[in-house]
Image: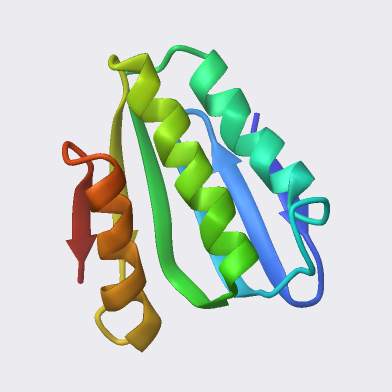
Length: 116
């Protein structure tokens, strides 16, 4: 069953059959409280005990610092489990992704970053 969080500005969708969380649009929420539903969706993927989680950010055109902090906390949580691999898919055509997504690799060196 696909889980979706959607507004006029963004969509975050989790497809358990593909083990993929897809982000699209512009995520510029005010702070951690506003990101709570998305953070919970990400946390739920960890509690399922899946060996692999894919974060597809290829259609995410902007993400503010609060959103980056949410992703960073998720990566740290996954790193602590030691049994889950993360693949982050990004786009070379979206300037912030090349710079910012590399920071996730610093938090979890095993994280696979694919910029297409």
